[in-house]
Image 1: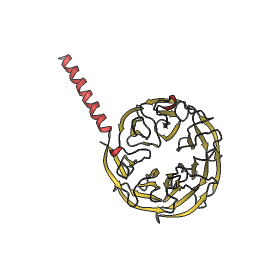
Image 2: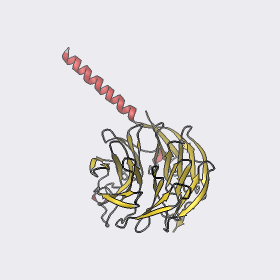
Image 3: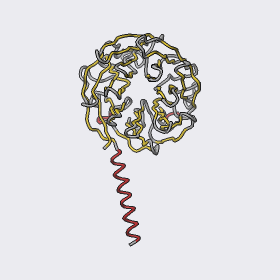
Image 4: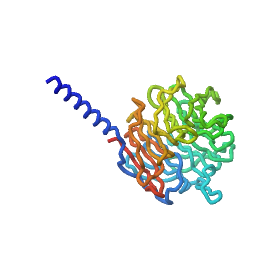
Length: 361
């Protein structure tokens, strides 16, 4: 009887764990159509958690597209961006726009390919102000400091790359410029850490060494870099804060240059690597869902094809890799934490030309 009891207990535990694992998996539950020109070029996407609005930097339609995440539908678009700029017969990654986008308090901010940051009134769906950042290439990814009312916007294609600090207040004053003087392969996704009030900016490469990257910690009040964290063998790209003072660092490493595909979990306070998660890399954007307690990795350049990676933030383990229908490239993503739904744009060539919607089952 004891053996049978133990066997039953083990079987019950295995069944429970199996059901939990299945319940945690993401599955596609819908899609949002993108009207107008086919979705062939886009960049950053962002969800404003308060308004339940999803914003997409849509270069094909020269606009920031706005969607309702409660009803999963297109609301409208904000025109006035440069769109897909062609150079030598190909779209210019560094001159096309819009690129970075973020939103809060009935405002949105979008970087354009002409090195300007455009301020948007979400209620009227119109650009209300344009601020030049002083470069010649696109304003890319950005992050918001709601405490100090500051936007940090990155010019990733300049040499050297730099970030501009701007006021979220109506004057939109330029508060400072941060030059990443040792960065030799641009600067990528920033994130705001509410625990210490600092911006963290992914620096893919330092000193022309592809295996040596960094995470610059920027004080928005002083307008300066206060320290540089030093992840190795990563080529940092995406960054997003999760639980326990940790952040996920999406690495562009994908097997090239002797760097295996990997994603790092790092601790902001100590600067140390908490976990190195294998078999998920080649990352662009990353995100975290507090509701799901999961990290999401836009692993666009994974060997064998791009996937959407799902990492359990409690155990820091990879639980799922999702190939998009039609083989779309999952480089941009955002989460509505009211529902835990994940939104991933898909290219019209080979994919749906829509926004795929995923949810835990």
